[in-house]
Length: 175
Image 1 (cartoon, rainbow, N blue to C red):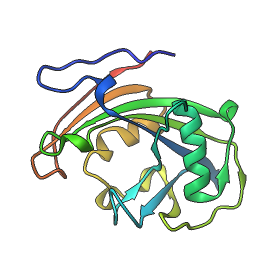
Image 2: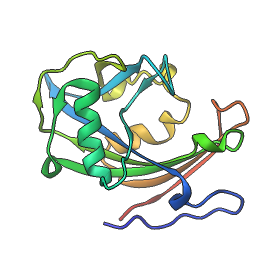
Image 3: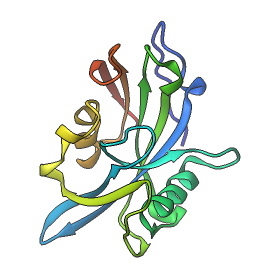
Image 4: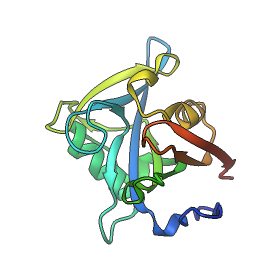
């Protein structure tokens, strides 16, 4: 599936942003839908609850990166057949352009392995209605609940000069 371009004057195009892939395992526990997030222990976003994922390596598809990163950060393994593109988010950091990224969001309901804490992430399950938004990047509330509700969207987030609060956000349907 190709991702339709969303262009805005004075913002870099999606093709020039750092490619990132995130994978969100989903499950139901006692009839309550849950998502796996993780407390970032090192690097970019340290101290925040984040989706599991990272950089797309050269020659790797977004889906391959999502599967690889999930395994590296949590011990859970999933296959290309079991991940679904759930949306995309372009993050723009005008005050720190090197941080800007084009992020592919994947979900999975099938995985193997044993969930474990790694040097980078302490994973934790959260009910969809009790997301830890106060411990996440400020942009999460602009796209995560919609993604968990099954809305496939291309969201653009522009961060303010403090690199933490959202200056602007908008989205369009992917389909």
